[in-house]
Length: 240
Image (cartoon, rainbow, N blue to C red; front, side, top):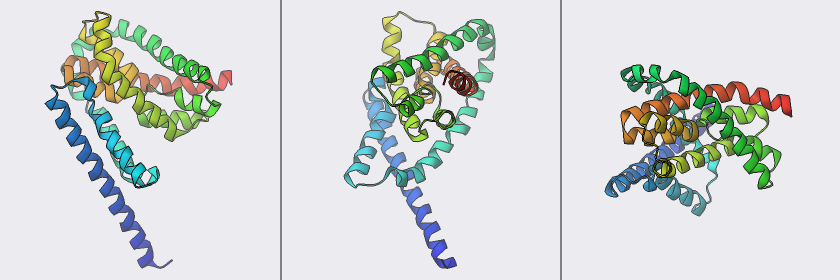
């Protein structure tokens, strides 16, 4: 293939990726406007509202999801800097975090364990394949880590990403109602639970509530990702 042909393919992919980035940002902006118009209700989760028309567009135009992910990968990469950005509110609330280290450690162990076991049992009860269960197991950690874990233990990274996003949306939409149902009022406990169960999407929702809840959710998300990434592949290898 000539140099001109290679350059044309390169710029075609760049244009395609840029197009899908703009489409995603456009629908997400509309979703934010809708949520604000509805008083900030978690039921109008912007990730869910933005994902629905994009999925419909891909299906209606018969576009392969891999073409969309050319731009989606760029946005996915931004999860890293966004996670690092949580260090700013963590610094401001470090005293509160330090004072709760012991209960946080206990909640981390229990929450991480329950997240994985519940995912595996749910998959088995629904008759899912082994590969699907392995993709479902890391559903409660942030997308890049979950995709890496799924690939390590024999699952499908793309399917793991879908499960992670679904889990995050469910947590962000119903988390506040669940806390009210159980009469949980401590913002630290709310945030930490949201971070373990609903990773980045739940953390974004927690920050919408207040900075303390968001900070503890960010800490939980980071710690849960580290623990799950280190322990889950070893456990899977030991019991497989």
